[in-house]
Length: 171
Image 1 (cartoon, rainbow, N blue to C red):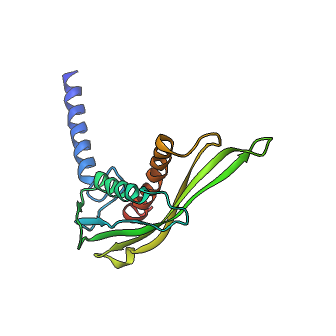
Image 2: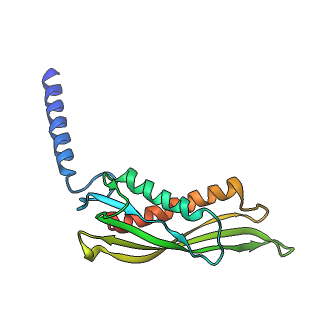
Image 3: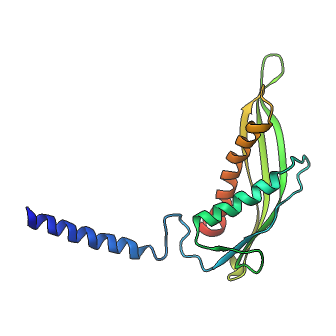
């Protein structure tokens, strides 16, 4: 029985070493090998026809935090290898379903962001693209306070992950 255990430990150790060295070009965040050392996220202006104060700062911080948490890139204020910039171009609330007395039973908040990604190490990877997502809520609720915070968190989580995937994970 001891003989079997020693082989199991050896093979497990060898397998573990192969897996760890095999992650040189792929890591658990799905980014692969990033040929950059630094990134910057410029302030995203709110150019949407309907302006909700503060959402541009919240979005800028959400994108910065996601990249910082999922990569080993260094955040800088200027001269970065990777640059994210753009603007919020859509903030829209629209009714989705109506009740029998013609009131909104469900509303949808949609936010759209135009992003310019600049890779100063490989210009072929540069892009300008629009990302958007939505949050549905009941028509009887007002989109203020904690309800707005919840909606923004859900929308920004999806949009920032989509931006991350398009720029670094190449999905």
